[in-house]
Length: 300
Ligand SMILES: Cc1cc2nc3c(=O)[nH]c(=O)nc-3n(C[C@H](O)[C@H](O)[C@H](O)COP(=O)(O)OP(=O)(O)OC[C@H]3O[C@@H](n4cnc5c(N)ncnc54)[C@H](O)[C@@H]3O)c2cc1C
Image (tube, rainbow, N blue to C red):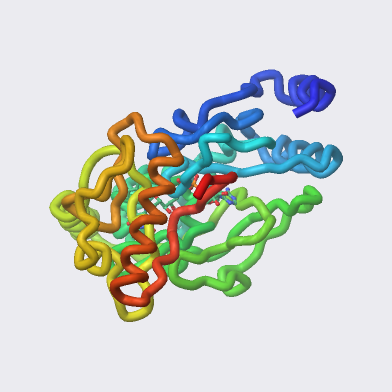
C-alpha cells in the first residue's frame, strides 16, 4: 500500500492498524498480515470507507469473527475492516430482533432466548458474527439463519444504503447474501416460546456439539457436504483422520475439522486441505469443495 494512501486512511481512520497479523483475527490463528485493519463503528463511516476504497481502487475484505476464513501466509494486500460500535448493537422490539452485522451471533441468539424469542436456538454454538452468518447462511441441526431473517440493510460499494427483504436473497446451503454489498444490520422475526423450552433446546444442541466436535483452533467444518454424502464420512473412510502437516491436523474426533495446534501456517492448513481433496477424489471420485473461504495466494 503506497504511503499517500496510508496517510489518507490515517486521516479518516486515526485508529487504523497497519500490517496487522491475521493470526489475531481468525479462529485458525493463522495467516499473514492485512495491509491495514480498520474498525468501522457507524454506517456513515462504512459509507466513507467504501467510497475511499473505490476512489483509490483498493482491494478490500469485510470480516466478522474470522471463524470461516483461511488466509494466505502472504496476507492480504488491501483494506480489511470489521464492523463494531453502533454496527454491532442488538435490540428487540416485540417479535423482532435487530442486530448490527458486527454483533456476535452467539450473544444475539442467547439474548433472544432470554426474551422468550425462538428461532436461533441452532446458532448457540456458531462462533461468528451476525453479518458473517447472513453472508454464509450459517446453519446447524436442520436449520439455518435464512429461516429467521426478515430484512437486511446493506451498503453498496458506491455507498448507497438499501433495506432488502429476505426473498431478495438467493439462499442456499451455506450461501446467503454473497455479493459486493456489505451487510450493515439484519432484522429477524422470532416466534414466542417459553424461555425454559428455548434454553433446553439450545443446551441440547450445545451438548451434541461438545460430543461430536473438537475444541481448539479451527474454522469448523472445512468442506461442504456433497449432495447425498457427509464430508466427514468420506474423509474418515479415505483414512485421513489424524493426518498432520506442520502444525495442522485432521481432527481425530470429527474428520471434517482441520485443527491448528496454534503454530500452523496458513500453508500447512492449505496443504492438508489439498491432500484430503486429492485422497477423497482418488478413492471415491467425489470432489470436496471447501466451505471455508480461502483468501490470498497459496502455494501448491
Ligand atoms: C468451532 C466452529 C464451529 C462452527 N460451526 C458452524 C456451524 O455449525 N454452522 C455453520 O454454518 N458454520 C459454523 N462455523 C463456521 C463459521 O462460524 C460461520 O460460517 C460463521 O457464520 C462465519 O461468521 P464470521 O463472522 O466469523 O465470518 P468471517 O469468517 O469473518 O467471514 C466469512 C465471510 O463472510 C463475509 N462477511 C462477514 N461479515 C460480513 C458483512 N458484514 N457483510 C458482508 N460480508 C461479510 C466475509 O467477507 C467472508 O467472506 C463454525 C466455526 C467454528 C470455528
